[in-house]
Length: 442
Ligand code: HEM
Image 1: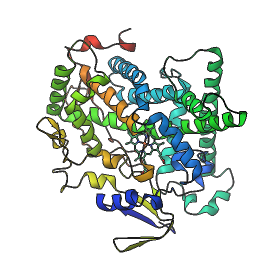
Image 2: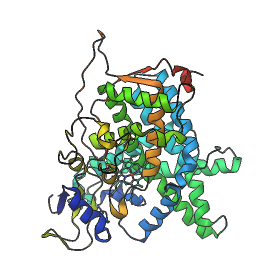
Image 3: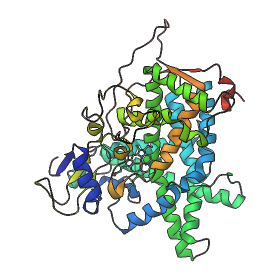
Image 4: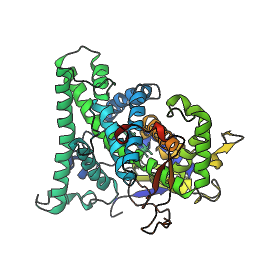
């Protein structure tokens, strides 16, 4: 692409070879002029793979590894039950409610604030941050990244103005919310749940430490907040939206999910994390969604540090590598009839089939850069889908005459993808409607 070497890896074999097994050489990220200009120079997901990246990633992982994420379960469950209430109150606003609910869950995870009010400016700030990142992560989004001389263009040129606006938004997000968090600490107006910023600072200072240690811990905690909203909001929302859309297109799949929920959870309560192991069909639905319409179809670009040779091909240092996750998950030799949504492909004798390739091996990226938020993200997907499916029925949208509108499943382009049109009708299931709480029933 212009003068930049770029390789698209099209099969799991070569992806795992280059991005997993040779991860020491392939875990860098290309540093482009737009990253710092946009205020992302402390976002570790976009950093070069050096010591600072390691420190930030380690601090992040301490809060989001499989054991640590369980401390957020109670909060995730509460937010999922609230989403059910919002969906009941505004059944035609599914997309907006999903976006707001996931953004609010992440803000609460980070700072312990309740940002659920949809007019809350905190949620607006989150989505403004994401809008900038979406543009940054589309390869070729900024011509300046291929022609670095353009970074000296005057500040009134439109792309410079755009970058400056997003830098201000990103800085606002980090500084303002962190200041609010600190102010609330003093007044003891704290949420009952643990929050990541506090936990990171405590773990890096060990509760004591010098001013310098505290400043460094606060800097890391603050920087990570931008990673979480940018990497976690769109991806998680996309999966949820696609699942509900798939349910509206495939009523027989939905009927099986309802039957499983009725048998495991029953009509007198909402699902919980303790049901997760038993909801095998639901698990297969989540896997099939990630295969059918992967939320990150090309992953995030990696970059090589040194020259390498793979399968006889010379790959120079500084080459940008893209894993074509979508192609691997739609390979008919691995997934029969790949355009059809069929969770059964992951099941055998009523259990998950260990021989079926789990899309999770590809969808969360690779090697040292593999998504460190995946356990938290999958927990959020599980509790939201289980709760909403337990109480609602999803069907195709209808026109003004009440006729069903058939929507063709098509994905939008972008780093994070989703269904182009995911409209559906949301109706309470009679046997579980009494479980709906929150804004719609208070
Ligand atoms: C549930 C849906 C999610 C999907 C499909 C997903 C997917 C990905 C992918 C493909 C990457 C790039 C990995 C690579 O470079 O090879 C990534 C990186 C990352 N993700 Fe996720 N993600 C999800 C949720 C989350 C959540 C909820 C968080 C935060 C809590 C998160 C935080 C991150 C971070 C910080 C990185 C950058 C890691 C690094 O560069 O070292 N992700 N994710």
